[in-house]
Image (cartoon, rainbow, N blue to C red; front, side):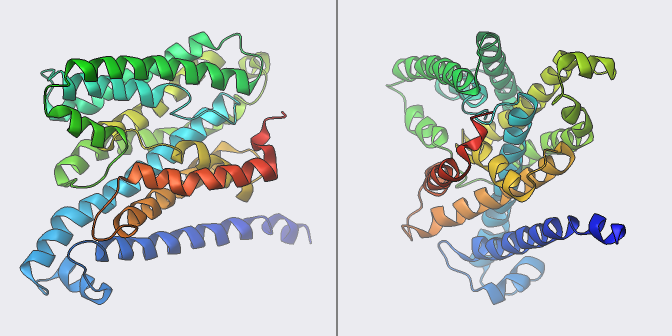
Length: 341
């Protein structure tokens, strides 16, 4: 009897995992099929693994849609995981890359590169974006040390992000005469169009480091839920560990911002959806689940970006807003996002 009770909680997780995998698979087929030119789903195996189909179809699918699909999954996974990290280790349900200054800091760093033509190699863009994201996050943390509630901390983050956005606008005004402003506009709304294998090569090494590291350190994140004195008695230096997690979140977000721009809402929303599936706070389960849900949400948004005004595309950052904002409103009505804690 006790064994049966112990096994029961695993079933909802298994069902959720299967549903997420099935949804990602279905959306991946839709992602590779839609766009200009349209490709029938039945043709995809031959195009991907052989020489069937038109040469143009093979070129578009293999060289544009497959790397864009991979980037969509990696970007969503990184944003979902970074949001879960920030909300969990800071114990703030409103923490996200956008509200903690990470996205704005990374965007400011990229504005310097793209608008002021800073001499930085393409392969080093994630490093610069990481430095900017980490700097923005640390500024918000320092400014919000005296905050008494999650809402106060979030408002401080909004204020710092606004200051960083003001700096970006100043750089835009300096570069207004160049054609780089239009390029940066498409970048700053979050965009995955026209991404190639070169962009995938820039991002994947950072994901291979950042995502497993967060999973391996998840037990330490659980200890951070305790009071700092209790955590110290268990041999964990709470402040140092928080900085490690914030650096991991900045690494994940910065590398994505470097190639796709600041895609909003994914990092804020996915941890709350994950907590509806696993109400008990456990980073060892929450982090992987938020990673998968982030990949699913961004992939769905990218498919939407290709079909909502077909044959024209809209930036994926706009689609994440269209999908996520109503979900946030529903969660606010149902759960209050944990703001009464």
